Picture 1: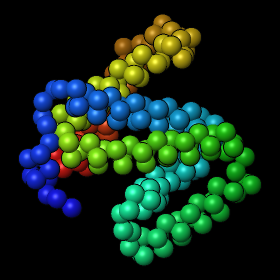
Picture 2: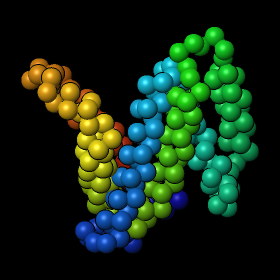
Picture 3: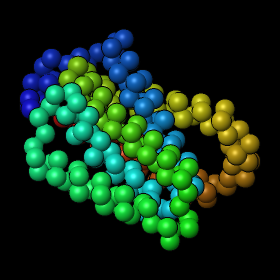
Picture 4: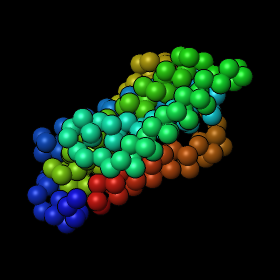
Length: 193
């Protein structure tokens, strides 16, 4: 694996068509994944949602193997063991809060997140981490801000009409954490920033 400095040497830091395309692609995949995740969590139990989202960590090595990346036997053993545990846990008939639609949506989110991780690695070689993540966060935010009124107009309107300043103060740390730390700092560090 090349050191971040060597990645930086061949990557562009310019705001150009390639860096915009990279940010748009990653922002779209992450926005769709987050939408599936939130929808799934609204229909299934938190336990199921959390376990199913972790499929991401299993899907990435499988996808890499299909791309010709050698995967050590211990990773294959871990993937197999985790899949068996996941199947046993999510097949639990005593969990009345879980729904098949919610579980399927969480699996779709995991697929999106795995694709995101794989594409982040690819784009991280071509666009500098700071430019890549700036463009990704901007695209993701623009998509989310656009999608909410289009897909959930009544809910968005009700929220805007009923939100109080104290509600906004309470939400601000959550929005900043998700927007800056989860969707900005973590992927920036992931690509060698």
